[in-house]
Length: 185
Image (cartoon, rainbow, N blue to C red; front, side, top):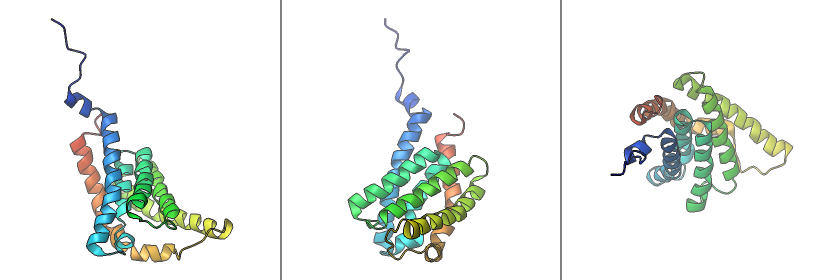
């Protein structure tokens, strides 16, 4: 009889950390596309600016899987959301992409040194400051067109979304890490 020791079972493959990261990144990218659409359907066209649903998937990816995953989630969410739904608008797309990548990098770096709450709050504050600098440079240095964007107005409008992020994302990440057994591999 031939030994079958070299064949891996499906549960062995699914327990592989790399597989979890890839599947998690793909699923969070899908959430990054779907969640904003759901918010727009349920709460109207301004729901994205108020609840910041596209940020949620990126922030979860950064805390769960790291910078690369979060950057992929942010980039793919923005691009595929635009291609599938026309949102964000083409004028807003590059700015949204830059904003999400800023959050992905900051949170991915900060979460290596600090707990999830401190990392998240610091990312939200520093992310807005860096994003304001990027907007300033894009508009005033490089002469890109603005579409009425204002960091201060976006912070005021997005306060409900920021509150939701601070209250829920660390809890979601904790559950994901426990259920997926990511920290012990």
